[in-house]
Image (cartoon, rainbow, N blue to C red; front, side):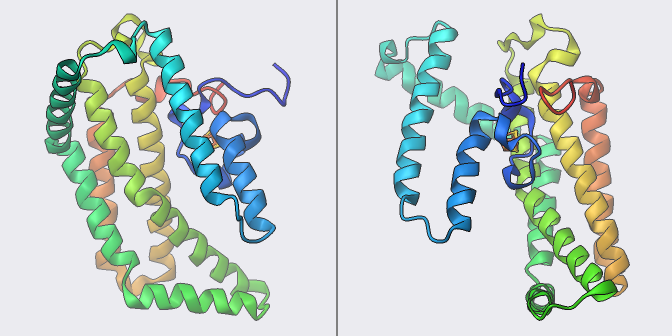
Length: 252
Ligand code: SF4
């Protein structure tokens, strides 16, 4: 495979932060993101909604292909069958959401959102941005960048973590899932568990930085760190082979 070729399946077990991804030019999803980023850098993208429409068409094509590969005839499913599939999916979704891992992740997202939206954090974030605009340099600049990056990391993962935890619990409940045919390090749910664990670790690192930058918030930050650690431990216990999963591109 040369450097320019896309890596098949890489987007299935990543953190979807395409802007920061080293493989953006070698990923089917990233390629499209890259076009949007390049357009945005040039200014307003008048084709934004057209791009979304095209992406919708591409997604439907992808879905058709996937269904074909799995021998499913999407057009051959009756209304009654669709209703049953819908009912099963809803039940599975509710079961997944009520699992302690999902509940813990949702609790984290709620608390986290409240904290990062606190007026003084937002004001600090905005004022720090203004200082960057003023062209400050040296240590001041370093602290400013660190604060901004830290908040960006926390914000990026705060909803990603519960979304992945829900998906993880759904994958784990799917008894018909073909994963049982594969060794643990190739099972899809272990890939989901791995990227969830990595996201939690990055969030823990970010809260640790924030603790150094805002020591007055010690109690609040420690409570988020404790919650994340508990979530991390629960996922490790439930999916002991998670870190053995080889994510295409990132781990091979
Ligand atoms: S692999 Fe990278 S570029 Fe592709 S979807 Fe994931 S984060 Fe985005």
